[in-house]
Structures are given as C-alpha cells and as structure tokens.
Length: 205
Image (tube, rainbow, N blue to C red):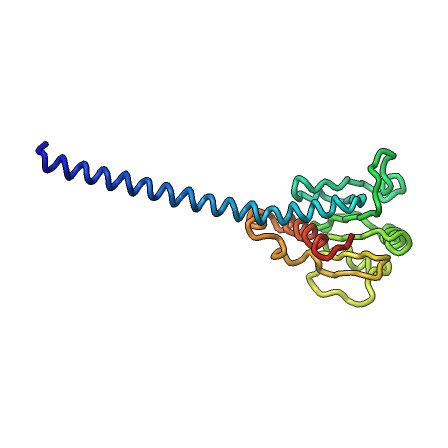
C-alpha cells in the first residue's frame, strides 16, 4: 500500500470513528431524555399513590385483580360480610374506608341486596364506593346510587361524602394517566391507573 492510499484510509477511519462516537453520544443523550421524561411522568403516579396512602384510609377491592402499580396495595375482600369489610384486628389505624368493585369484565355476582348494603355504608358510614365496570349500573341505580340516567358507555363511577357527591365516568378517560406510563397498559389497567390519578386529583378521600 503506497503512502497516499494509507493516508486516505487513515482519514476515512478517523472520520468513521468520529461519526460512530457522535452517533453514540446522540443515542446516549436521547436515552437520557427519554429516561428523564419517564421518571417525571411516573413520579406523578407515585405521588397519587403516596397521597392515597397518606390519607390512611382502609382501601379494599372486590372482584378481579386490579393489576395496578405495584405500590398500590389495597386489600382484597371476597364478600361484603362484616368481618371482610372491617378486616382483621391487626389492620393499621385508619380514618375512613374505600371499597372498589372491579367488574370491568362484567362478571361480578352482585345482587340488589348487596348494592343496598353498599348504599347503606355510603349514606350512613361515609364509605367511598367506587365501581369499575358497566354491567352492575342498573342494579346500582335501583338501589339509590343514581338520581337520573347515566351516559351510555359509562364504565366507572365514584360516590363519596355520604352520597352527596358522585362522579359518573370518572375513570373512563385514560388521558389522565401520563402518556409514557399509559402506553404499555391494557385498557383494563388504564381504568385502574385513571382511578388512582382521579382520586388524587379530585380528593375523594
């Protein structure tokens, strides 16, 4: 290889190495920006969960697993008997109760008698009652949870403040969940995450 060709080869290698280093730096910076955005947006979910925990409410759920954030750990109940709702004696001290009925698949075996009991807990003992789903809405209405018709397509509703306050469709819009957190979630998970964010936003507890 003559000297001229060697110089051209060396210049080419230097340029190639410089391009590779530049691309690597761009990739690292882009990954850093994405990681920063993820941390900032996921922190919003963490803040919402910390808010709920900080209120020291006895949060429980009935029905299918919520599949929410790992840090969100309500206790699972399997019926609405006194012992289930009030829990064991070693429950931490709390200032109120939240019952979440997760029925997004529409399979919850709830009759009007149970909804009457839940309505009584809302009105007399100021339980927060949250329903995720749509199949049970007519039964809830018959038990006194609604005062008028609800919009078609509603799949979530929350009641609090002794039943004086309610929000129909409160977790129907997944856009309340930060975009980078929302992207990998199923529609059912989006409803759960939206519920958490809305509790934080609206201060149901």
